[in-house]
Structure formats: structure tokens, C-alpha cells
Length: 455
Ligand code: GLU
Image 1 (cartoon, rainbow, N blue to C red):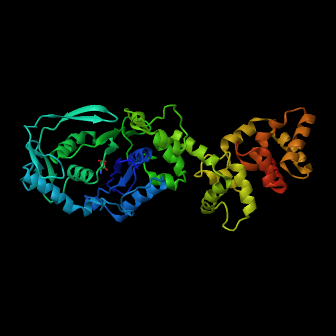
Image 2: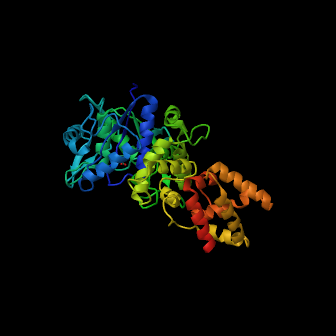
Image 3: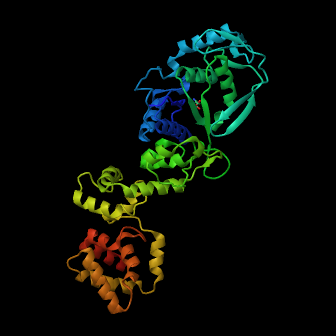
């Protein structure tokens, strides 16, 4: 165990934004890399927006991504409670200290933080130290990602609103002190708040954590950052679309962090091993749906067949493609055939539909291509004759028969493949053709070939 303590401090909003998830992930990675502690703290001071449902979405998203926390809701810990809404007494105690040292004052019903005055010598004692006028003093932040950043707070700022509720800057700093946070890893949108936070840390006499502000995630195209309305912006959406959490997590690691050798698909253990601040980019990261999808495909193809079937079955049941009590062997056979070619679980139902029913979508482009060959009907008759004669109807014998017939006709056997594939599946691509035909069975293959011949 190291003494590194990091936290993810979301304000539950009802959805789990990809940017928040990436912040949670980077904190988690840093904790796991250093052997430190990962804390989940719920910044729920905005009462209206914080519902049980909003919390549930967040915790579920964290669990789905496999980001387990060492202290926080449900698991507890020595620095609890981990909900800001339950920490009022602590905030009052800290406020009192600022009032005592003259660094907080009341004006127009709100309580303000004074930029100049005395500060405590240490945050756990009551000695105060006179400091020279600090107003207009630049605050220097040695950010672990951004480098040296200077910023001057010009004006005193509110720390408790007129309605008595504490302001984000205040509770955020108090909790970071109380929870012994050593590294603050968060989105770059908070960089502009950091000078206020540093002023508060110093007024309390608390040691500063290391700040690491991580780049924003920009939308797929255009200048703006990913907003919750953009496709792919919410983690719960990936779960609904049956993405594999390992793939999404792998992708999120690459949004603003680069392993030295530019690898993309990496095990989480190797990411944990190499994750550190120098690998985090200064520049903004751009969301790339295609990269995410191709990682997802790669992970999907690598699953043990048993896991693939276990994930696929309920999806196919739900899509109405496969009945709950369908033949298990047939389903297994189809899935074993399709796994190496399937692109996603989201599109799996359409990908396998023709194995289970005679009514399936026909790809118009594939159809056009077939019709472009003036002799397609003639070829179809040749293929039908071959298929009739194949016995037993196995991948091997079908292949051999087609080869033989093609040689006699003076053509390459694969010249017939697109036509056969289209006739039996309505597609131009899919799993390997010979085992596909074997799996469909002779009766089905012949009836579909005849069906096309009648068109
Ligand atoms: N509640 C803040 C947010 O969600 C936390 C900022 C921080 O990590 O300090 O943006």
C-alpha cells in the first residue's frame, strides 16, 4: 500500500458522461498503478438534481466499467460519510476557523472568502500566521499534466450562499483536506477553479495535493466538447448497446493517454503497469467512434465461445430471432460460425437472422451485384444441380463437389460463391460459406436456391 489517495468526486446528474467516466478511470488507474487508495465521493450539495436514481446510474456505470472503489458509498471507510450532503457539521467547523482567522466574512447574507489576512500554520492546529497582503498575488500551480500554470484571484469569493448552502469550491477543498487526498486528477475545465482552491488550502494551512488536469474530450467532429446529447456520450448507452465493458474501458484509457509504444488494444493489467502522468496528453482528445467499435469487435472475437453464447443468447431471444426453448446445439453451431465475423453484439441479431427464419433482410447492393451478371440464372441452375447431388451435406463434400463442377464448366469455383451466399442469406458477407451451407442444411439451401431462381 502506498500513501497515494485519489478521489473521483462526481455530482450525480442522472447520467454517466464519458468525460466523468474517463476521470474516474484515470483516478482508478493511478491508484492501482501506485498501490494507493481510490475514493468515491459524492458531491451532492445541489439537492434538486440529486436523486437516488441519479446515484444508481453512476454506481452502476462504475461497476460496469469495473472501477471498484476502496472507500465510498456502500463500502464505507475511515473518512466517511462520503456524501457531501451528510457532511454539514464538518463544513461548519471549517467555516468557523475561517471566521476566527478573519478569512471569512458575511456580506449581503452570503459568506465570502477573504483573499488576504491570516492563515493557519497547519490545518490541524489553531496557530495562525500573519501573512502579508496576498491579494493580486499570482497562484502558481505545478500541474502534473499541464506544467506550470499561473493565475491570480482578483476578488474575494462566496463560500456559503444566502440560503446557507456551501459553494462547490469550499466543500471540494475541505473534503480533499479531510480525506487526505494527495493527487487531484480531474477534467481540465476545473483548471480555472484551482487558484481559488489553492487559496483555500493555504488559508487552512493544509498541504497542497498534486494537481493533474486531464484533457477534455471533443466531439467526433467540430470544435466543441462532447455534450450529453452527442452519440456515444453516455456510458449507460454502451451498456444498452451491448458493448463489452473491457473494450469501452480500453478505449477510454486511450482518450488522453498514450502508452509509449502507441499500442491500442491492451490488457488492463498492462495499462495499470504503465499508466502515469507523463503519458497523459496536454492536447484535447477527440472521440472516435470507429476506433471504439473496432476495439469492441476485437474483444468480441477473442471471447471464449461459451461467453460469447452466454452474452448472445438473451440478445437474440429479445430480438425475437431465437425462441427461448430453441435447439441449443444448432444455436451453438451458428454462434461458433459467426463469432469470428460478427462486428458487434448490437448488430448480431441481423447478422444471424437468416439462420433462424426464411424472412430476413435482403441487402439491395448485394442483389444488384448478382443481377449484373447476365448469366446468373444459368449459374444458379448449375449450382442447384450440384447441391442436389451432394451427399453427405457437409462443408467438405460441398466444397469438393463445387470444385469438381466448376472445373468441368471451366470456371473457378469461387466465381459462384457470391451468388450462393446471396441466395441463402441475402447478403454479400458473413461467415465462411461451406460451413454456413452445412449448418443451414441441404433442404434449406435447396429451397432458397430455388426461391431465388423463381425471382
Ligand atoms: N463535483 C465536481 C465535478 O463533478 C468535482 C471536481 C473535482 O474533481 O474536483 O466536476
